Length: 212
Image 1 (cartoon, rainbow, N blue to C red):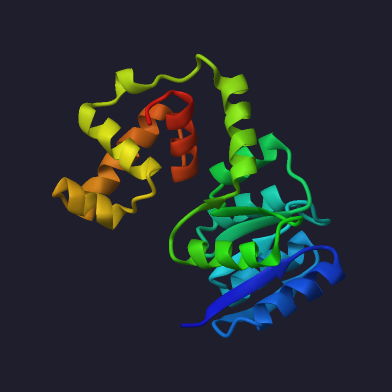
Image 2 (cartoon, one colour):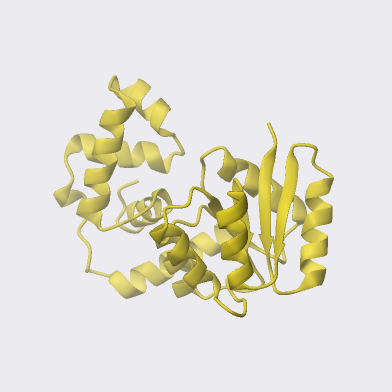
């Protein structure tokens, strides 16, 4: 199965490097290269790539604006952010807007390939050093502002712990003896109670409130 990619970065040399990297992998195909936000949105709408590798800081529509548009238009493309540096607030905003993976440019190229494979398979990817920074930001910003285990049922706490251990919905359903649809309903309720919007945020919240 071929994974179709769109690459978005305002530095041509970075685009060249990314395209060369993924050409070495037989199951990837680059369908678009974009150097600004406008080109990126046009490419995603036209090609509907499986994955968009996105630099958040680009001219004519920055990355967060692109993410808001993709979410508003309900486009199915999953997004991996690739950046030279990220502010903690940017990471949080990107995660809340549906980003599935975050990789720093300073890391080994093969980690980006691994990240894209994981995201395509339905998982999320956040580097450990970024996880720590985001967690610290959450703690500073929302210390005392969120409730923890007191609002969750015992079954919901059990699900949070399973999610934190890396289990996907199918495995959760098998272990709990319920359908995947029931798992999704539980997760929806948990997200609403804890005011989180993704698995990554849920795990970070669980860690900061000692639910795991």
